Each structure stands twice: as structure tokens, then as C-alpha cells.
Amino acid sequence: MIFETHAHYDDEAFDGDREELLSAMQESGIEYIVNVGASLKSTAASVELARRYPFVYAAAGVHPGETQELNEERFAWLKEQCLLEKVAAVGEIGLDYHWDEPARDIQKLCFERQLDLAREVKKPVIIHSRDAARDTFDIMAAKNADEIGGVIHCYSYSTEMALKYVEMGFYIGIGGVVTFKNAKKLKDVVEALPIEHILLETDSPYLSPEPNRGKRNSSLNLPYVAQRIAEIKGISYDEVVAITSRNAKRMYRID
Image (cartoon, rainbow, N blue to C red; front, top):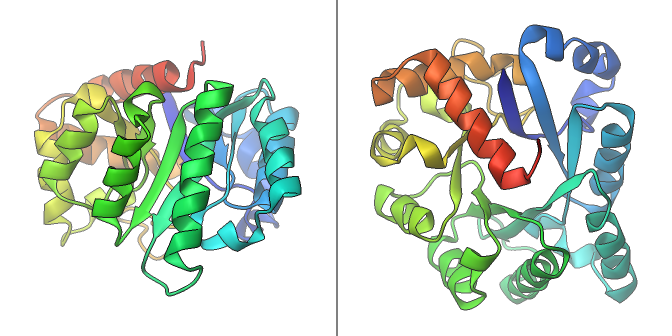
């Protein structure tokens, strides 16, 4: 069965059918889902989803775009969530330079603090990095992120950089973009990566794969991603599902 390593079912896009959709996941071949926090509010919602559904786990963290909301009191609350049994990771955290705000210094400080938090609570990290390749890698190297472990979510950089993250012991999250006709760079990354360092993800409700591009995404679309990876790697679909599931369980320390 498939392990969905990164989704946002707390998003308002699922307000109309969230319970129906999640209740059908396991019979549709989705064994586990990690619902990822991107703010304090979505972290709380992710923890609640993990409480309600046995096959759902949460990640607790603040996305770089939301780092202006962190202060000492809120950071203390975030740490409490990270200590919960069904919180499997700290994330998503990182850097996003696509927009001018929050200021880069604020993003960097909060990224470093959340890396320190992950080390303290002994849980892996889920890294968001957009238009910030060098600073992301440099901060992770300076913080000895190889001792923490985790995944580079929704990977969008070069093959060379991906292999550096693999050397650091990290996994690479691959989602619907790999099915796009114009995604040659990501396909080259998948071809070069050891399958033992690839995780399946959707980033639902975003980034639906072909043939559903432009529609609301869900974990039910992951077979399209797995099939495309199988074609690129020259292995079977079943091998992709089995190996990526094993990878995810190892990283998140589930089962």
C-alpha cells in the first residue's frame, strides 16, 4: 500500500468532503498519511486529524511564509505539539524567497530554531525550499542536519543538489510535477536518485498530476506519481510503492 508523506487535509479545499474522502483512503490503497502543519493553526488541525484517524500522522511546524507569527510563547506551544506521540516530524520548515516577506533574516532564524527543535525532540524534518537553494543547504550543513534526518519536500532544484542531500542522509519528496510534460529537470533527478531515497507525496490540495492537473489534488492521485517514477527508473510499479513505503516508515519511524 502507498504511504502519502505530505498532504494538507486541514485545507479549506476539503471542507465539503474531508471525512468522506479520508474514510475511503485505506480501502483505496493508501496505508498512511502524514498531514503537515504550515502554521500554528494548521499544526493544531493536523494534530486533531491524527487524533481522529488511526492511519493519519501529523507534522508540526511553521512554513517560512508564516514565520512572522512565531514568538517565544508560540514557540513553546509548538514544542509541546512536537512531543506528541502521533506527531511524526517537525515541518514544514525552511526558506521561501519567492516573495519579499517575511524578511529573509526572520526566515533563517526560524528555520534554525526549528532545526534545533527537531534535534531536541528527536524527530525528522520536512524541508520547504523555494528559490533558496544555497541558503537552505548551507544552514542545514551548519546545523549538522545529517544528524536529524528528513525529507526535502516538493523537490525543485538540480540533480547535483539532490545527490548532496542524499549524501546528507535525506530523502527527496516527489509529487505530481514529475508527471508534467515540461518537468525534464525533475525527471532527471528521479533517474539519478537511488530509489531508496525517494518518497511519494502530493502536497494536496495542490500540484495534481496528469491527467488531473489543475484539479484539487488528493492522495488518491499517488498511483500516477508512482507509475511515472516506475517508468523513469525502469522498475515495476509495485516495487516503487513497496520501496517508497518502506522509506517513509523508516524516516517517520512508523511501524
